[in-house]
Length: 91
Figure 1: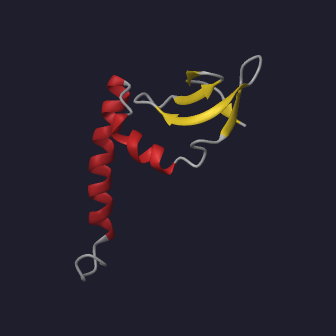
Figure 2: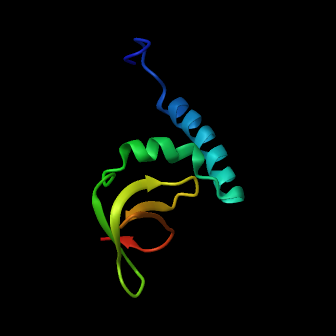
């Protein structure tokens, strides 16, 4: 409405969203490719640059959150190295 000055159909907005989302989701399920979402996800990632601890293993993994990679895995800086975490819960 703000761009065109005319009301938009909620059904049409949902249809267009689902069309784009489902195509990207199918690609992710088939190829493990999270890349359609990486840039937007990292831009909105509330923990970006902040200390995190990821639990779920024997000991929590701690470091600075760097965002996610093209597979959706969490990237952290642990000491002087970058590490990718594919499991666990951010504490």
